[in-house]
Length: 321
Image (cartoon, rainbow, N blue to C red; front, top):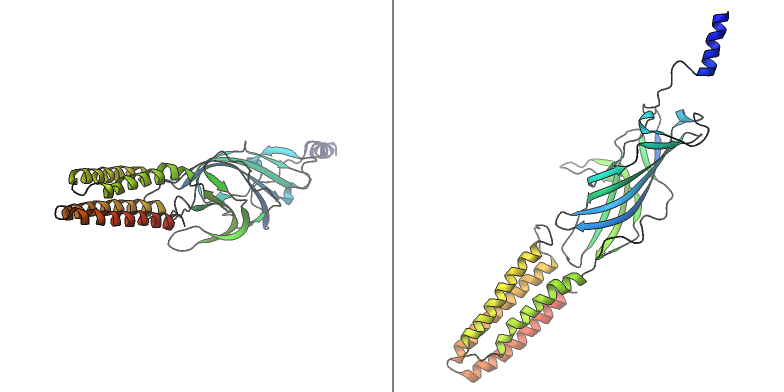
């Protein structure tokens, strides 16, 4: 009798001789609420189609097995309980700063906050570069069959001031979507997608690319004001202009990745190259005529010069539309 009472006392005051296993997945469906907050965008690398960012992901879910285990919100190690697996589809090189801690309250509500810093990829369309608009997409899915993601009440999706220069960002939105994993066959997972629209400021490219190319075009067009009999001077101006344009091609190539289509800046560059070649052809033609009729050659040069300036204006209208 005394032994039985002793065993009961040990059981009451010391707890059960075994403990419940909280690390296994629950049998019922678990709703995981997500909050996503984009804290900063440090850099966008167009050549790699990636962005260097910092963002926070807050997750909350209820585990009924933990109800009543803690009398007040308590921080415990992540490995001591079951937790859902959540994947970001666009991650490339992210570092998670979480300290592997979660908070559990008396009702079994588990809260976790993770800060991510690193690079993510994004699907980019550079057709209108450098007047393009891109979308930063954060697609979250879970491979756990008994887990479904939902949007937590959260108004502020991003910080109002980012470190990056040269971009304008919209407010963004979070939606529940079926997310394709990619590949030959469509594989869809239900998840959450946060999209933030961004627009490039073209001022840098105007002063670094468009303005110098325009100066080169005007220099090349100056040959129509040179005496048609001065063949060497005319050929020299157009040749130097062509070589300068070729050098600028290397600068432009380093700004965007290798693409199967032309961007707006490519169209402007190749159009400028064509105009310089047109000026070269006009110089040769009028010089040939000038050897026989100088007055007629000067008149044709003036007409070609006016057409040349008109084509430059049309080029700007097409590119800057």
